[in-house]
Picture (cartoon, rainbow, N blue to C red):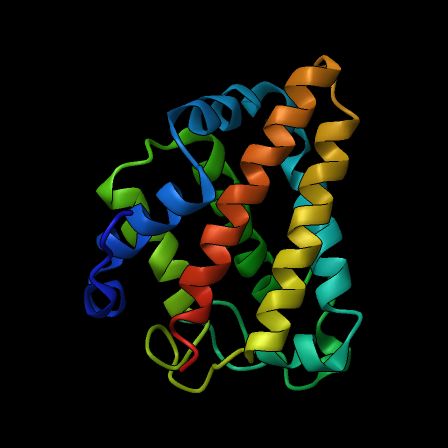
Length: 189
């Protein structure tokens, strides 16, 4: 039986990540599958991002988080939900972030810097980072990652990869997204 320092799980994100990867079984082979999916996912990232933002903008509870000025965004702020469209400069700014997120998942090394990045994805959606006026409730973050999971799975299922590789790659992404979801949830306490 492995001993886990539970207090350290709360204070050390690298320790937390290592526990999660060990427990879930997310390892180097999963990372290789995710990175090898780049030629199949990469060309469709724009469409995946659009699908995500179309859904986010179709609910007032999720769209409202795009009204406050986003940290680093130089675009003119929309004054109402009705002004937020998929092509609004504020939304374009956020879409660029999601695009970079997908590119990071398939293109970066899964090292300590990646762990910090995945943790920042969780923190940036709270008042603890970025704009202190923005705090996306956990239920909406869970909904977002459920949607992202489905979009990734659909994209992979439609790829030219053989069935065995597709299934293994879907499983690798599912493990990764559960780890990501934990790194989001930890900032919502």
